Length: 607
Image (cartoon, rainbow, N blue to C red; front, side, top):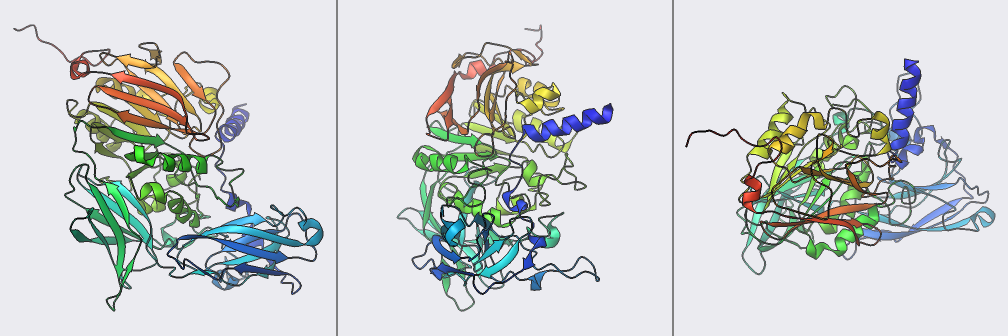
């Protein structure tokens, strides 16, 4: 009986939180057989990309197969030489596979080619980004499980495959520091990385950058260590310090070659952070589980992370009204297919190059058995946190731990890492309490807690079946801290929908849910914003008393601090950018000091 319950439990867990399958994992590339057919051809053009400095271009692929089938497909490979010469046999008695490297994207030959089944003629437009290597296109028959390689195209390459690309801004460890992280093909031995930057129309400075990378042996398992492996390039980070609050800066990425030549990116700009406590308009977008998608319709656009491009595009459209972005885990769902990290950083470049893009870690970045993650599942695809902590900068004391505090004007953000133990007595619990207790609420009245998994409240069917409506051992460990230190809002991802609670403590609404709260703090409002892109998650059918607003759709949250006394939260749908839920908080400093349930200090009878 117990075994049967476990089987049911695993089935419900798998069904309740969809979106975990990386589309590239559907291809059994190691089963490929070689069946080159001279009557089949495939051609790609143009041959050279990026002639005007672009890092993304469309390629036209034409192909012909005299014996077409509905399961024929096109794979995009990079590097272009993807032969079995790079494959190792599993043992000395086994021949190496024909192919051991997954494509970076794929599309079925019949996609938008209605007559392909009869004529065998096809045409695709595919978008390529600069990923440090050349590309080729291969036509397969036999479907995804038993692929037969029947034709390979000519090579296509960017003018400079090693160019510095996809800058990601992030808050530094001090309020007046901005970090710039980017990717290139230049090892530190080939070229010296740096950033040229300064105030607009002012003096320009040069700041050096550090360089990181990782190799296949840094991965913890398959597919990251096998068919999903692709060299990540070189990740550079520069620290721009002593910034003037709210000032506009320009910057560009550079590499100095041994002969003195400098390779440049295009120019970008950002606005420096406000001074902590500064009274000004401050706007922060928050979401989780966005992932990436392909504008050309390849891979997963229609069936894996359908909301990702919509969310990205809505944020880009509103970028003039956004000061910072916080992406709380499940970043790109690479799940061990390393090429997807480049795809994601290219997708968010218009955002991350302009405002700080702060990330948290989720199960699809960190979890892997036997590696110290709190959950011993396979969700990271063998990445075990390495790409996430390398590709993005966070101001954490230990970037592998992924918990950190960051201040933005009147906000204090405490970002937890749910893939590491957070319970009392742990290092992370001590961090959380210190982050919440050390903020000066007179200067930074808006205290925000963020985590990937739902440590607070969710009526998602996964948690509903469990009966706890939270991640096990979540709020039991932390709710007294939230209440004691008067945390205004707690945000979560992991569950792919939107939900807002009343101000709730110990599963009870301390006050009724509303669109406006004023006066002394009563309890924390918990918000799930995990619907930014990945396949949506169901709610339980019954209504829970503390659940005020639920939405089964893709969307994201936005906080706007008007001043020290007025805060606005909005939930926007990714499909149109319109507001579908909102509330405001009006609270003076004396209201922050006032007592409520379980947060009053002891008093003395002495006068």
